[in-house]
Amino acid sequence: MKDVSEARMPGAVRSVMIVDDHPLYSDALAAAIQLVFSECRMEKAQTLGAALDLIEAGLAPDLVMFDLKLPDVCGISGFQRLREALPDAPILVISSLTSAQVVQAVMEEGAAGFLPKDAPSPMLRQALREIAGGATYVHPGYQSSAASGAEDMPFEALHPKLAELTPQQQRIMKLICAGKPNKQIAYELSLAEATVKAHITALLRRLGVQNRTQAAVLVENSAPATAIGAGEADAQAFLSR
Image (cartoon, rainbow, N blue to C red; front, side, top):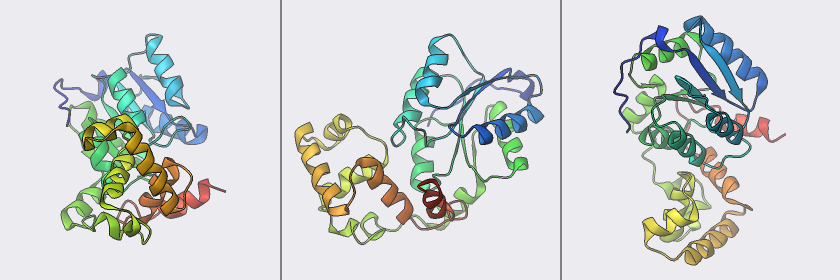
């Protein structure tokens, strides 16, 4: 996990970039942030590409608020690209994807914190203050579920169709859920990229889905409900209407 070495006080946050494709939520988030950092400047982007364009144009925010589910993002690859573009800025992930697997993945990739989208305002303010001070912050509901072992269920037991995958296909599916591209999967499993593509084609057919994103959603929605993830299936159903 990336360490944030420089101590930051709340008053030191002068600019914040919000990357979220829902304008109303983005506006509400901006209003909540200004209650903590009253003098900070806000920049908003509705896609990862737009955020990267702002950075290329010279934007260097003191803090980034990032939603994992964006129109031009698959898995956590979007977070990884943003982390590479802003290696020193703390990034607080705020997402409706709240399984322990997702939270652990983004924290290991260097996130400064994680909150579910339905977190109350006082919790958001607490997270902002702690991150501004140089600490990391994770929703206490995730910490409780991790301690209780709620996410220790074998991968293949999450959904009946996952049990039909071969061991190699299950390994590839786990890496897909972690946002790994085919080239990286091939490297980590010591396989030819063409072999990985063949495995993915086969596992998509077995799962009855058409692409990697649908496969990852299937796994995400099959994960046991936790204190912060109980509404994920309902959220997916609502957004797909």
